[in-house]
Image (tube, rainbow, N blue to C red):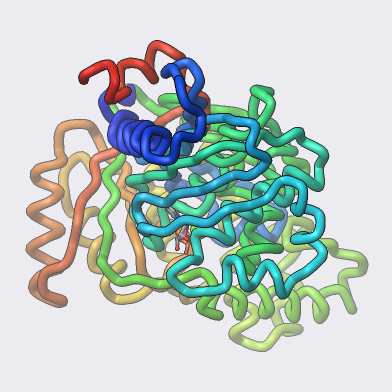
Length: 425
Ligand code: ADP
Ligand code: MG
């Protein structure tokens, strides 16, 4: 599960080469050497265990994958940061001296980042505003951003973007839980998405070849090794959804309602993390049918994560895989966030020899499934899943064969000069 170095090149190379062109065209940062450029890359992620457990203060087990958003900065002393998005063909400028005004003036922020096409600006400006509020000294300069994390399909391109910005503008300090919280605040406050902490944590703190066992209540974590012969295939259903589309918020609201009811009998439960499946057995009649299903999913999904980590430690990869599949069935039947397209991907994948487990990843309602399998069965997997899917839904699937990558980092000078246009590569 080692990420080939060439995988990071795509987005980082595009960002660096555009940045070099911008420097030449604008005359900003003239005389810049490759060593004057800071380049961050941050990965997307898939979640192997846990699902809608993060905002219930439970456990999750994401893996950072080798698809990245890269942010390249040519620092100067202009007092402004000019951001260019290659993928959205858009740009905007922030004045460092006016960041605190911008924070206090929602209307001005909306003018800057309000349009649908300019949604990416919310995440970028959001991270910068949060960094400024946290008194992180910020450099001015030209910035180019490029990525190859599929957008809006559940691999968390938004967290990869936030982590890339944070890392490029940070002080070089290692990624920390505080950094993940800062990026989450940026998404909550400035992009208006009530996401949990998992995505930012995975994008910043994961390690190569490992999954990240995260306690979303205590924010303690441990990177746990995945078996050497295992691999991850992500299947994009082609069905798009956006976190901001309301259904995710509805699930969160249902959980809040269920908690209010449960508190009346069970006392001060802060979150569903405080309940075990055993506790629930005595409270079944308190909740309306739908809320009971939601709660049952969350409590079971939380319990499955440490169980899975124990299986990994013992090398019981098949039992680990079974838990992944159980999680899908629970998301589908109890939390009701699956759709027929995702179910058919999961069921057809499970028929293939060498597949340990399969599930939807991300919030659901579309997007991707993740399949955890023995290395080497990729071809068979693609044809079995494609055949089953096309029989029901026609074409539109795409497959990504991925490796467990490390979290966000700055590229070394040697790496930058290798991908730089001026080095003639
Ligand atoms: P996801 O599941 O991929 O995180 P979201 O809807 O949460 O989906 O976030 C997607 C948003 O993140 C995009 O609309 C865009 O604003 C931003 N984004 C993702 N990747 C990039 C990129 N390469 N460049 C600029 N913005 C990006
Ligand atoms: Mg997102």
